[in-house]
Image: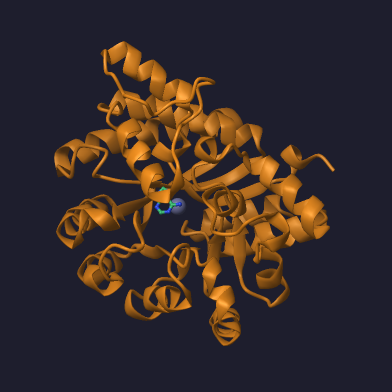
Length: 329
Ligand code: ADE
Ligand code: ZN
């Protein structure tokens, strides 16, 4: 099986987290910024554990200071997506890193990112949509600023709102105001939950914030009745197996619960989260899943159809991409 050539939908990719370390190191050099010890001798990102990962991630973001930086980043990320067979992707992006929450600046960053997305779509046929993400450990006040930016710029490109960052910081309910604002603006909703928190964290995301999708959600596996409910209610899990294994949520591929979720009828998709941080690619994830769980092309097709049905895009885009996957609507 050629894993790169399987047509793919990727719903969980952080734009800054997809920045190759050489790209960040290059910007740091251009700008004369010393990023300290965030790289290993071989040039890869250097961190130990999730909290440190978040710090290194935020340090890397400090050199992404202009719309032009994000235009170049988006082009580089989409080139990699296309090389991995992605036909439709959604990316998380944060006003906190694009103009520090200023709405005027955010619009300029967004213009640069959408320009790059259009160029990549014309070149490679890969369609990208944006999901504005607030950062949990930056607190509910800053999240409102992000939600306002999202609501003001919702449209053809910005289609969703979500939350990432430290799942152990604060309560999800504290972010309800931001999620309500986003929902009222017509945005689709997702939240990182059940990566570090247990099934109750996923329940909070679904019941308190009303999200249709959950980023990770994998620790739901600890409560079989809740897994059944996820399947019954059609809640979609954006699963990133390589990220989970790299960060130590599960010790190794055979112990990852993705196959159990699949067998129990939970709607799910496969993504890379922050691929250079986890030494992974989307095609690489497919290869490991095929090896580990004996998944064949029919399983991957089924999963990509589930992903496309859970995508936050308009119906015309969804229908066109489903057709590419050989699914009639
Ligand atoms: N931001 C980037 N990657 C993340 C992850 N795996 N969990 C939470 N927030 C993130
Ligand atoms: Zn994530």
